[in-house]
Amino acid sequence: MVIKKIEEKQEVSRKSVKTPQLLRGFRDILPSEQAYWDKVEEVAGRMANDYSFGRIRLPLLEQTSLFERSIGKATDVVEKEMYTFIDPSGTRVTMRPEATASVVRSYVEHGMVNKSQPVKMWYFEQMFRHDRPQAGRYRQFWQFGLEAIGSSDSILDAQVIIMCHRMLKELGISVKFLLNSIGTEASRREYVMELVSYFKQFRKQLSEVDKKRLTKNPLRLLDSKEEGMEELRVNAPQILDWLDEDSKQHFMKVIEYLDEAEVPYELSPHLVRGLDYYTKTVFEVVEAGDEGEKAQNALGGGGRYDTLVELLGGREDTPAIGVALGIERIILAMKNQGVELPKERLIDVFFCQLGDAARRKGLVVFEKFREARVSVAEAFGKGSLKGQLELADKQKAKIALILGQKEVLDGTIIIRDMESGAQEIVNIDKVVAIVKRQLEMMG
Ligand code: HAM
Image (cartoon, rainbow, N blue to C red; front, side):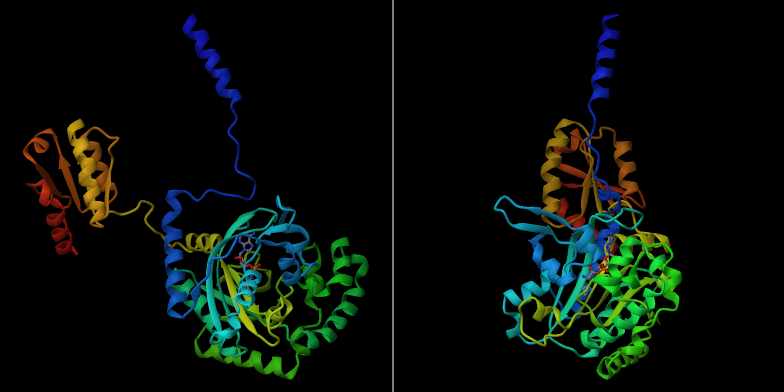
């Protein structure tokens, strides 16, 4: 009776302790997913180094004005999606929603204009946008980005696209690029007037948000997700028809380079991207099977931003180009396209111990292997040899080491070849060297 009462009490108290839940749009990346993250990060870093980009690590918080000025006040990101707050010293700060603005700030702040141009940098960082969460869209997400600042040469536009193509191919994803050119600010002015007069005919059909865009930032009508806009856009004027001669030539060259490198692309005449700093080339990368402009979740996007450096107080005429790929979306695409990676971390050696003395000695031996950089796993919490050998098998260990009471007394240890099952007893002081040699021979 008493026990029952205690149990009931415990039940009640357990129920009343609520685990705080993850915030909406945020996620844990669990150990079982790590293989995908490691793979993407390894390929991205290697690719960036191969193409002479230097890594930059950026602060997570910046002054809010940095993003307002560069991304543009009348964009979804700045209007609705930024995590902005006043910090304890009274400064308006924002958790970065993207990194191009920060890279340019850093370029200007550190006088990188005096280095040999272009300055090429890459990053692998988290971004924060208070967006509506759905599959592949989160409020905290990771981007791999490349920025090349200080050259207007169209070969750089092609190079960042080619790099993304190679990287995604190496990760097992087949993709295509959607391309457009939005020209210079001057050439865009006339086009925007044309666009406004086109959408004015449909003013009554436009949502309140789009009516506001029509007066504040008409280009944004082209990437509006409001209902009915897709149909209205079909006959909207195309910016390519309004390009100045220089932008046209520049774009043609980009296309020629991409043809040469056999990168799959489609022209996407209404692609303008959701950020205001772009000039000339703009592009997005989507899974090969996706339907061009209708593709919802681009794997990445980028373009030229020839006026941003000047806008943020740097030298006039400092052209630049860059791209950012969304890591969560890349991993989703890898899974979508059937790329499989081992869930468990694969190891060379598994250490099994039996009894308390062996476990104590085991801690030391384990450390010796770790110092010698041999990948070794253990299950000190497990008692039975059978259970430990099963784990060794599951993790595809090539060798298992077995240490029991007797071996501890004798100063020996058993080496077991996991494939053949053959076992030998060796001196415990020599085990690291012997196992290393055996692993080398196994290849
Ligand atoms: P963006 O198109 O805003 O461009 O973002 C680039 C990529 O980040 C997207 O294509 C997508 O894969 C990923 N992404 C964006 N928002 C989310 C989200 N809420 N959840 C998951 N993934 C997301 C930029 O950020 C520019 N800074 C790219 C750039 C670099 N342009 C020139 N240089």
